[in-house]
Length: 214
Image (tube, rainbow, N blue to C red; front, side, top):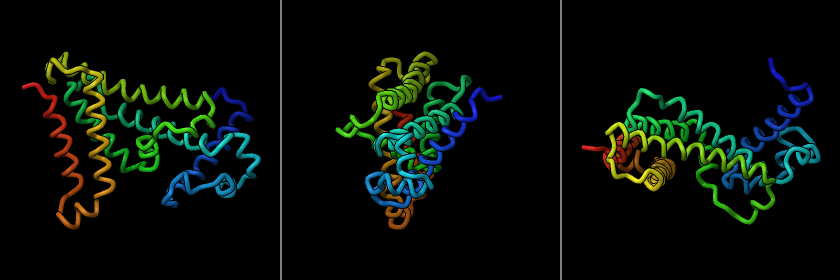
């Protein structure tokens, strides 16, 4: 039984409809959010622009809400992939596989998160959206830091690793690998006959070997 009132449920459905419309437009526009207007979004969602502005004060707010969706999906994927019975090293490998799969299943949301950079337009976004985005970002980074801590404690990873700096190195490595898979897929596949899934697994094993103990 939900605690939401009918009015709250309608607001939630309308908000999702606006975000779904924005995502659909972004997927079909090479410029992404930069190639989409509030007029476009209102038309695709079958709302007036005035209604869209009742939910989002700017296009930047819509972009932030999509990034929040991306973080939520990423965290859900990580939670599904890792569990308490795994060593830290095993958990790190499964986390890498989960992020790769998420980048394939939800590329728009994944890369909305990964491509985000602080910019002047952030000041057009409500503080609550900014805080939620950073809160979720800290959760996913915290999961990676905890994984390295677990690996040190269970002996599967090198004992002298700094957990935070290593987490950012691994995150950067994964981002580079996944961006290469995204941008060079056709070149790798057709010019060099590389199976992308196998290449991803090899790359993850290289990552694992840099922190493996023994």
